[in-house]
Amino acid sequence: MSGGHLFLEYLARVTPQIDERLHSYLAGEREGSPLHRYLYSILDEFIARGGKRARPAMTMLACEAVGGEAELALASGCAIEFFHAAALIHDDIMDSSLLRRGKKCAHLLHGSPLAMNAGDYALGLVCTIVVRDPALSDTTKLAVLDVIGEMSARTVEGQALDVGWVRDDVYDLTPQDYLAMALGKTGYYSGIAPLKVGAIIGGADDREIRALVDFGRDSSIAFQIQDDLLNLLGDSDTMGKDYLSDVFESKRTLMVIHCLSVADPADRDRLVELLRRGQDKSLEEAAEVVALLERHGSLDYARRFARSLIDSAVRALDGLPASSARDILASMADFFLERER
Image 1: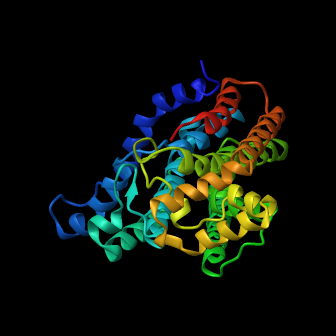
Image 2: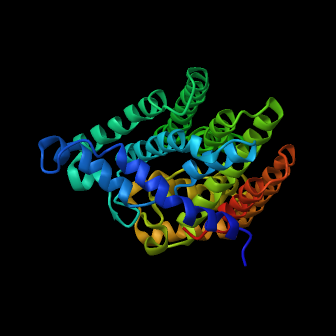
Image 3: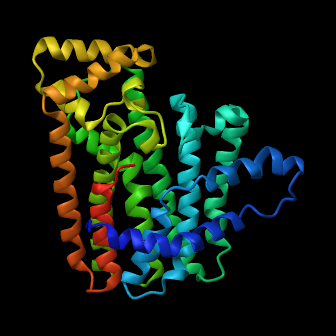
């Protein structure tokens, strides 16, 4: 049995509760009304496509791991999940993506203006859900909102680097540059913020918060690296999104950055030439990019890098008291590396 089985079993238990809460925030408008058609149904359908629900789950787990009651963190976890939904909708528009979770992207189904607006509404829900949560004190709400505010800023910074490097034809990047981008784009809202919020709601001390922040930082960046690898090596059926979309969008993944730094001049020039073609690449040229990454050991380099991050993340959990919640978090780290979609 895989090391991620404890986390998968936990997700199976709590996902129905998370889904019910998420949809409850969108249930106020009468079906068939203009607002339902043009806004609520768009976001509700996007949420209904599923997803791992890892962010609400880890918020609840962090709360429990420091001695709190997991359900107290459910609403705040859902707030972060709405941030995630907004980020995906907006990201698909920016990247001109075609598929999301096996279906046409929201902007293709409803047009970019309505899709963008639905994403904006999801962002508006983030703070509203926390402020109106009757389970939290005002002091706790402010602390949670402070974390969410930082999460929002860091995520936008990471996205700016990710998009800006492509726009400005930037190739002289290092693994540290990638880590800074991934920490912003993914690390805060997919690791640090959910865990820190859960810890705050659970009444954690500074040492426990630090342990969870360190765990969230390293495990979430490993998650992003694995996501990048799956984009190259999976397919549209298993990934639920465009196969090779990162290649067509010329993203500066860790594998691309590594290959640019170690390839011989001829292969480096060819990789740059292919990256500059952007969405105009043929499928054969996209496959050539993957072949270059494989030839120069960049895929194995990324696998080793992700493994080292997961090992570091699990060690950080030593700062928490022994509990089943801590064990499930460690299992989550293994799942991040083992997953196939």
